[in-house]
Every structure is written in structure tokens, then in C-alpha cells.
Length: 236
Image 1 (cartoon, helix red, strand yellow):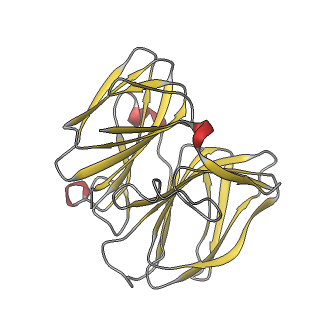
Image 2 (cartoon, rainbow, N blue to C red):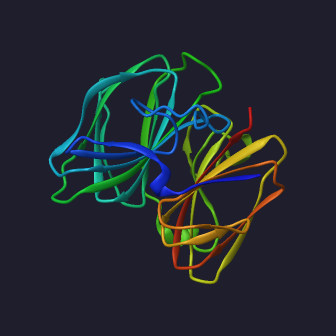
Image 3 (cartoon, rainbow, N blue to C red):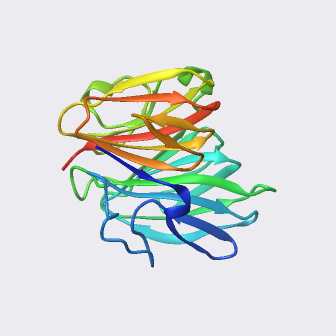
């Protein structure tokens, strides 16, 4: 089964400083058919104006992964963590028992991010933050694991998260095909960050999303040079 969600169909809001699109129900956008995809709860497509951002606010019991598409995001939290994450790279925040953080675009241009929330396996864990550069050459024609709590990814260099799931990215040249296995009981949600691709025969344009479940494999063919981001989690 594949559930295609064209960018034009997403909910969202324009706050002036923030233009947000939501692949799943979030804030004032509520669609009972788009509440989650397995353990994946939120996938926001955010554009943040220069010199603005999210002021300090709390979270708990959520794994929050930020994939920077363009520009850079600067993080600060009440645990003393601070860092800048640039385009193509990733930061993770395991909110656990509670953390207060702020995220700002201190760049001269608009910053574009995917913000992904995954429900953790264990509640009340110790909060954690981390960021890492991931050279895109490592994901040419294949998925690179960016953040993971899957047992098989231990030692892979991926950023750690408190859930048996993973965030992956790949880049494909026009005409290239990539096949990714999907084990029974697992679900995947994929977004085309740039370019266009077919996913199990369905066409996706830039910023379209697709949920995949109950399929033995995901076959992706780039219709244009494409950058792909995918989350793989437990189905239930």
C-alpha cells in the first residue's frame, strides 16, 4: 500500500516569519486520516525567515529530528547545548523527561527544514541533543542512515534516537533506480526534498510525500536529479 500526499494537499499556516506545511495533523491543522504513520507523528516542511525562529519552548517524550534543506538552523537549550546545523546535515533532540529549546535562523536568507517527530520506545528517558555533518557523496545512489535507534545500526555513525526506527537520505541522478527492503511490521514515509521520482509506480514531485506499508520493498526511480528523505519505523 502507498499513500501519496501531494504538497498542495498538505495542511499548513503562514505566520509571516514562518511558512509551514504539515504532512500530518499539527497545531490548527487536524485531519483524522493524517494523524500518524506508525511511530512517525509529525513531518513539518518549514520555511523560516532570516533573523527569526522558534523562541524557547518545552518538549517531552518525543524524538525530534531536523533535516536542513537550505540555509542553517541554530539550536540552544536549557541543558547548555548550542550548535549550528547547515543544509544537508541533521540534528536530533531526544526530549525525554523534558527539555526547553529554541531554534533560530541566524542566516541572511530563508532557511528550509524538515522537522520530524517520532514517538519514543521509552518515556521519561534522559534528554539528549546532537548534530552531525553528513557529506552527500555518502548517499549517492543509496540510502545513508542519518539518525537511528535500530539495533542493526549500532556503530554506523548515525545520530542516536530512542526508538527502533531510522531517518535516511539518498540522492539519485536522473534515471537511477534504488530498491530498499521493507521488513514485515515496518512502515516508511518518504518525501522528495528536491527533484522528482516514482515510488512503487506512483509519481512524486518536489516536497510530495508518500507513506508505504505492507510492501516487501520500496522501488524509487529518479525522474529528475532527486534528493530523498525517508523515515522507517514500526508499523504499530
